[in-house]
Length: 428
Ligand code: PMP
Image 1 (cartoon, helix red, strand yellow):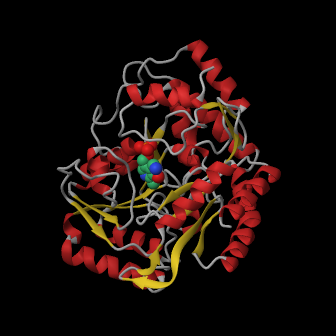
Image 2: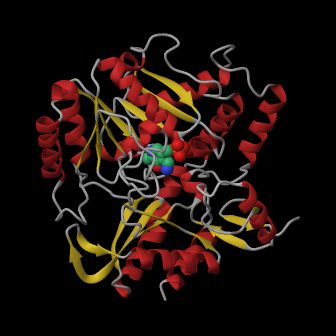
């Protein structure tokens, strides 16, 4: 087997520079909460492929479902010749997402594609064009989703022109907005939408219930509920992007449950299929079915192998109660993160929910126009020290100053403990 160094040389000559990797090591295998590279080094995995492998990597139930399906057929295109697995995933999505109203789903390949389609559906159903998104939002890298995403570097720089009719308003971000309560933060956002967009032209309000790439920003309680209620009152579509928060990550099937909201549409991807590419848009039947036959689709969307993986993944989540596992990770990790914050003033805030936890790093005692001065250098130093010590750890945030924990939900207590110890040591 070639070494990582050899593979890196080959990569430099073959792979575009724009596609970068966090570590220079090449994977040979990955299991529950660990990953091994071609040189035999092992990492505790607090990344889960960016919140994807919640049931673990190569989970046996997913592997056998995939193997069985591959032997039956790999692809027919659901738009040509349909199959049960697609229908079954849509049935699961209807059952698992918030709201007992009648629902429909459509399946796609990636999160960005799901978000694009949610916007298409909302515009079609309302006959309106304006879409409201939030500061720090991340919704993908395709042309429309770049416009929806807030951060310029590395996602948008030089890639314009961007899609039109997208409007951005402030997010409830208690650590940085002076601790505004949810109702006040929502009133501010709504006031801006009314004055700068106009409720009559509003097709959709699109928001991550807890922002992912933007820094694991947890809005103040009530913010989402106020926003959802107001959106509904205008006749626009309230879309929750649960691509990162969904499928048990935050300790419930979907983060919307914690907020007591029933979004009109929900986008899903990542954790849904144990690592195979699959995404969905699920929502109110009358909104979803507003689109004419043939108006939604794509060659691979809802591929049968990915659907088989999703059904096995959802089965595992149900059987092992991985929502409870996420809450357990929270209860084990949070006290250690809080103890760490008490020791290191560079940690300005510990936040998150379930197995989606974060540390926001700041320069102690310094503040600027956006509140406590962000410390991206400290975040990258901690992540680098962790990688070298054997812990896969991601950063995020508008200022790249947030350390985020996204372990697989099936991580065992020993792996979690070792990972947290490595994180603690990375701060020394
Ligand atoms: N929305 C959210 C909330 C995400 O976290 C992501 C991925 N980080 C996306 C959309 C885009 O998903 P994908 O990378 O599968 O296109």
